Length: 115
Image (cartoon, rainbow, N blue to C red; front, side, top):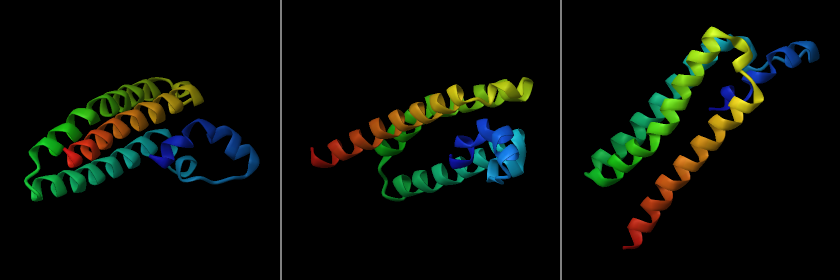
């Protein structure tokens, strides 16, 4: 999700002469690029869980991803209507939601491995 963490800085980066992946891609393509990375990573993690026949971990991972995917799509929609929505506040919401959900998911998986 790194390119998304730079999305609110496009104008500042341009003024400073800094070229980031996000600035090079633009708003729409930053979301598409990050979404593609997210899908690929999720597919690999899911494949690992399914390969181990760990349906509980697979299900828990999917459930924990719902808030992340929901906010990602909602934010993408908002930015596509108004680029001002590609701001620090929404970037931090995305990071917090993702971090909390992933920590909950892998915390439960770690706890389950000891039970």
